Image (tube, rainbow, N blue to C red; front, side, top):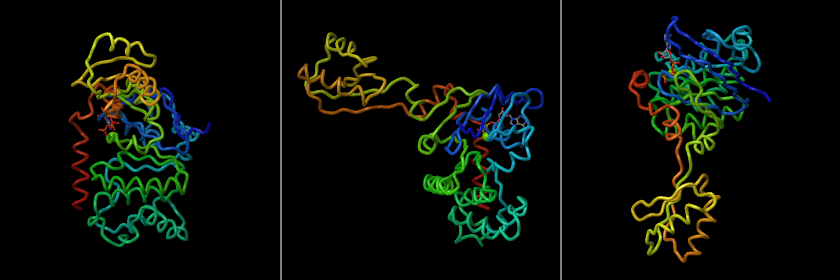
Length: 332
Ligand SMILES: Nc1ncnc2c1ncn2[C@@H]1O[C@H](COP(=O)(O)OP(=O)(O)OP(=O)(O)O)[C@@H](O)[C@H]1O
Ligand SMILES: [Mg+2]
């Protein structure tokens, strides 16, 4: 198995007192899209900065494509690029000029610069505004320009720290369309973090939740939702009288984990609604109960997040400051 990232008992203590990472073990497969979720201050940025060699871990080890981030820092830097949480382009010059500066910083040979800049502008959909001052760009265009700059090095893995923070739903969607295009063209692994659960749900093949410096949950979106504990099938039945013997019989059915009534609806808790439904409807039919309406309620990734992080999703803190920062960027 080709691992893009491996972290082994990674610990980071700032200034001898703030334990930002508290023994992180993590493997991320190559070529997928990986989401790191967690409340403010959970350690997401710290982990990304260690994996991109900007910070050294206090103890433990981390590898990017098999290279040790501490011992082989120079080689790791050739494989990774990083789009930080903070602003990383200049607003008083054009998008093209930003890319040119980054191309020079990255040491891209003069003869290759134009072609690479053009490709990056193309994929991120910025060709028609490349000559405009960045201060006239929308928030989404600024973010796409930052991603275009990070693309120039043709990384094997791109780390994106809150790629769509503060953007409206339309701009977020475009950022993801462009990122997916980039991924498809270059086969790059994407490692991102976000506070938008819908983005993790839609775009991540694999998710880890980190809380207080520890990985507290791991899996695909579906696996994590299942781990929250079941799905509820609600039946609205014609002429249904809630009788305890009937509820008891339903409770005893295979695959049923619980039964309860709510507003005259019969609610049945199961592990997996799709596979349990035929057996339950057969039972209701056998009791001559006709069903008017069926609905299924599945746990969302929000529920997963709240379960594993103790409900600190909307904690006040630095994230609102970040939103403010990105708001200011949009205004130039
Ligand atoms: N340079 C630093 N010096 C001291 N403490 C720091 C430093 N950077 C981060 N921390 C602390 O380390 C912890 C983890 O911070 P980190 O920025 O990694 O969290 P995060 O998950 O990225 O949070 P957010 O969602 O707010 O961006 C927090 O308690 C934070 O205050
Ligand atoms: Mg952060």
